[in-house]
Amino acid sequence: MFFLLYPLIAVLTLIVYLLHRNINYWKYRGIPYDEPHIIFGNLIGFRTKRTVHSIHYEFYNKYRKSGHPFVGFYFLHKPSAYIMDTKLAKNILIKDFSNFTDRGQFHNERDDPLTQHLFNLDGKRWKEMRHKLSPTFTSGKMKFMFPTVIKIAEEFVNVMTEEVPLKPGGAIIEIKELMARFTTDVIGTCAFGIECNTLRTPETDFRKMGQKAFTETRHGPAITAFQFSFPALARRLRMRAIPQDVHEFFMRLVAETVLYREKNNIKRKDFMDMLIELKQKGTVTLENGEVIEGLNMGELAAQVFVFYLAGFETSSSTMSYALYELAQHIDIQDRLRSETADVLAQHDHKLTYECVKDLRYLDQVISETLRLYTIVPELDRKALNDYVVPGNPKYVIEKGTSVIIPACAMHRDPDLYPNPDQFDPDRFSPEQVAARDSVEWLPFGDGPRNCVGLRFGQMQARIGLARLIQNFKFSVCEKTDIPLTYDPKSFVMGTVGGIYLRVERV
Image: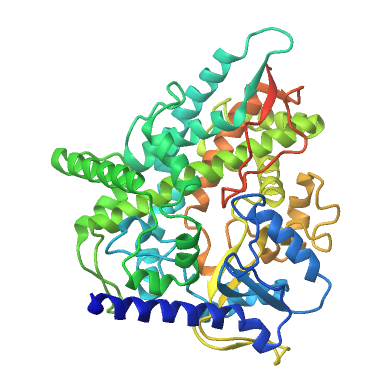
């Protein structure tokens, strides 16, 4: 019994020491900060009353005019340098990226294989995985997947047409779930080669598990906070984060898909195909002599898992919020529909890969939507060595310190975007984009660790919105919530309840 008691006492003592040290971190360094809660740090109310986005808005605006390049923040028990200066953000993401390559997120490849995806990995493993995956998201690979997305978009229009009667007033439709069903079908086909058909049968395991992965955790608040705050220690303790049924579902689905394709020599030119090729290649030697191992099954499953989650949720939410704003700004919607008609007329009325790239005002609408509704609220990095802020020698981000760049709050900074709560796609006209620093718009991150699936996400959102605007008119109705209410349980920006709009055929 005593042999078990002593290690337990040692672990508890270590935890108490770490908690005390972390909770006083910014106080000892003389950096401005808000007094943290003993458990939740500066995230008081998260998952119960407040979203991460609202916490960022309040905290950022409190220190926005303070003149500090960064201030102290506690993400649960993790002391973080909260970046207030866009020039410093640019240094971290681009100029001095070599010192901020890591995110410092929890992952445990041995016991929780789905956590070892590109978003979580650090160091050499991240570099190697990024090198392996980058070729799968080139323009050429997007062209291969384009016809698949178009096919599902046509089914999307058919489903919507069946729900909207050909009469004045059309129908009131909850669009958020419908957008999610569309992107679930797209990602399910491109990532797994599975005809999910959630557009016709919404209650699929695929959809349920995707929702659960975003809104539920494996453990309660205390253990989840511990994993976020002390990811390295949590990994040594062999802790897991993915809910068991989600883990079993995706691991089984990936294994069955890979086995079936390899056994029957099936080639679909999709994301899964590319990952299977990486698995089959084994060891690869680069030009510089560096040796990179091929993917094992756990690594392959993790990349498919994160591609699915990131692809269906972010794109569906972006499309939903875009339609929500277009329904309130009919003049912008009409301008977008007119551009879509003109571009299609130049391409024999077919939505081709080249045609989609010509929909420039649609790109502006999507960019402004992502500014106003930044799906992922922040960018996280970790200092690999002590970093002295250029021009501010008193400010040092110490080795191992977490860094938070509050993208969602910067996107609503009136000094960067006048009248920030107003929906105005002209902010992203070519002239205004050229005059703006790239780091002032960060829905996909920036620098070498930006979103690897950027092209794919933009492609499916463009196709989906173009086909909807071409065929339907959207407006607000008595069931439309203005303003929207957001779900505090979700780390990404999600609403409580649906988004209802009036939809009429054009």
